[in-house]
Length: 83
Image (cartoon, rainbow, N blue to C red; front, side):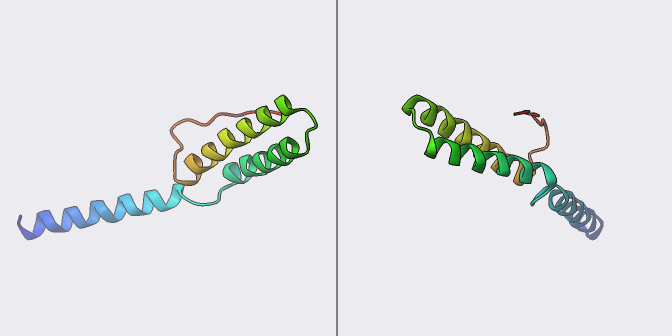
């Protein structure tokens, strides 16, 4: 590789790093889903019925996985869930 190629590769890596930093972290959408995941998990823990508790904990787990996806820059598709 010559110096021109190395400079272009360095510029591309810097641009990709800036774009990744733009999408990672605590944005409003991951915070929103985290709120609901915690709220549903608490509801599952206080639910008197075992079936309801398991369903709430499964939904909270799925929301937690989705928060992880969004936090790490997964903005390819966003599901809006209204409770």
